[in-house]
Amino acid sequence: MAKLSITLLSAAGAVKCSASGEDDIWMVHQGEYEPGDRIRFSTDECPAFYVIRVDGAMDEAYVYLTREQYEYTIPFERDNPLKLNMLSYCLGCFVGERHYITMRRAREQENRNYRNLAKNVIDQHEDTGCYPHVHANAETKGPVAPLFTAQNAIDGVLANTCHWPWPFQSWGTDQREDAEITLEFGRPVDLDELRLTTRADFPHDSWWVQATVSFSDGTSEVVKLGKHVEPQTFYVRRSGITWLKVEQLVKADDPSPFPALTQIEAFGRNSE
Image (tube, rainbow, N blue to C red):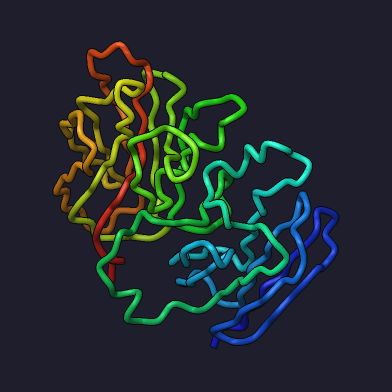
């Protein structure tokens, strides 16, 4: 059995709340979050699959941990009157005086399930040893940058007919022609379907007509994209891959300079 713990730490590292147990634990923090607060999830068994919930208003995250500790920084700052860092979260997240947080070892049947292997609602900008994880060589900058980080592309939210705020967050490329985004699984997986949902806030948005999807096994495929609201599906059978990259994006001949990616979905199973 895995020994687990959840600890809420202040910016200075002081323990504000904690819980521990085996295989399946929960913690309730009574009090408002403060700038710099972070939740530390600890285990004595890794690498392994876990299911983590960082807030009662968010989905659980099925993740693969490769480190014994994973820290999630609360994206809430009371001293920011516009709460710009919260624009990509549901309005009920991380607010109020009662917070429900959970961690459990994933069940064996969950580890065999066919699923969207890209989804991770608790992914963060840094590589924290919690997978899946995305990173990009370009992200839209400025005061509303949280709405356009790479992590938005694997949060499971498909709304794409506007460009801000939640639930219309996306990965923005900062208008770079060489923009690319990499999805790391952290372990070998078997894929058979890739879905790309591009942002479709027309005429504000443009779109891509072509992209290249490269895989860790050295192969790649060129996929054709169009001006669509619906997810665009591509059948890409790959076994034992550990990452994929969407690159060489070709923009449509359209006046708007703003193509964006709302979601990457990669369907398959963990490799045996």
